[in-house]
Image 1: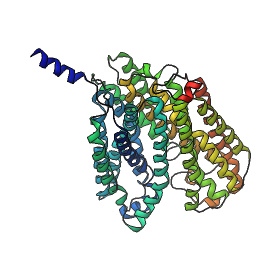
Image 2 (image 1 turned 90 degrees about the vertical axis):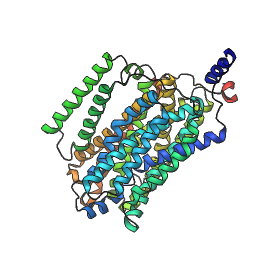
Image 3 (image 1 turned 30 degrees about the vertical axis):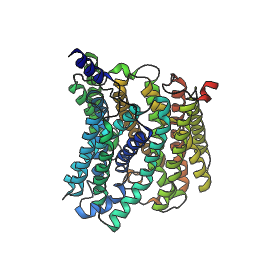
Length: 497
């Protein structure tokens, strides 16, 4: 018996065999499909909105089709990140994908606008969980030094979703039926689960069971939802100084203070505040948030600039956004190689964000032909793209393995808030500079021909200047961030340094 017990004990503590390169590729492919689903649903719906509004004869509530997804996905990002550290990645990725698929089916079968909005909220709950869990799973698969190379692949997924989403949405709505933009998620989601689940048992396990601080999680989500509503409604449905917006801001601040109070007193806080401190996490979060805000703020508002100044059609303006989305992937790839090979890996992100900030300043003070503008935007996007892999890998490398999911969820949460804030701020800047009505710059734009090109050029100087300021902040944060050694295999190039 003692020998048998010894054999059992040895089996239980024996480390899992390492994943083969083929198994890692299979898991990464399934993760890329999973992330593509969440990224696609942020862009594919927009071009189908007029068709949906026409069928349901309800245009006034169309914005909620976008807002419901955005609110839900932002609020639950830190929740899924923390729960993946408690219950494991497998349980949470199944939950997130199941919610996403169920929401897609509900949207596709929706008989009216309220049901569609509920379905989009359910989709958002799943989509908001997918993003941090996928990024955490990558950290479980490969070492921090190798991880940057894979981050570039996932940046490519975002690029493909950003470019293909509006095109697919328009094709489905015009030639098939708008419900196809939701039905397409079902086979893709099931395929992702079929690829991923058989390999999940081989992925190293780092989660730790502990008591859940549900009150802290609820306070954090409630505060986030109100902040997102303020950023969505401010300057559109209500003026920024209206009693409604002021009351909502006060409620968000009160809930945030309540969350901090609960986090300090709880034995096992939902989001431990100490992991947000130090010389890595806050700077990495701020750098990534500033870069994300700059690229999304420009992506949302540049089509208006293209149409007014260069007289492009709506579809041509959409195509002119491709350099901004596509070239940033190249910057991510270069930064990923630096993470794998260079000892001083953050230098590439410092150089990239500094260059992007200089280009932003140049855009603010020069008027260029369209080809010149696209060239400078490509340089800006390339430099900006270097921020994302360096910030994500540095942040994950700085915490214990049992807290990677928590800190990754917090990072996604902060980035989403920063992106929403930047879009709202850029809109406010344009409105003040143009002295225009919000319908010209908002989601349902009025006739752009009513804006003189010279006025739009003058107004966009402030927008480009604001983007440059954000990128300069990202560069400063990268400079201040501690450059901790990355775990993982050392390459001959690094040894030579």
